[in-house]
Image (cartoon, rainbow, N blue to C red):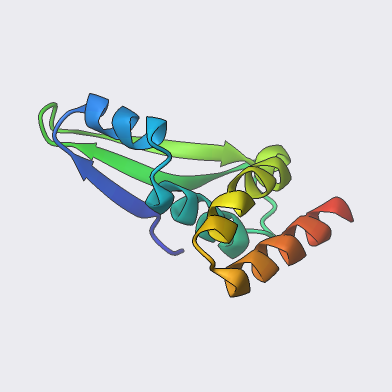
Length: 101
């Protein structure tokens, strides 16, 4: 099993700032995790971890399989904005694959 992307932050509020600013690294982590696990039989997957140094704790973020397609669709625009067209093709193919399930 491939370990999900880990984000190290001083306080959990710092991660929330990354989310609010739509940090592209979060979109990448989500998309990579979904594509790696597209054929999983699990109901949900571990997509990323947030290590909070101030609290000395780690928060694991999971995603239910039923939300894979919508999450890919939501994040496709960030890959288009960053002109990552090969990844856009992979995302589109994954969305098509999921629509056939």
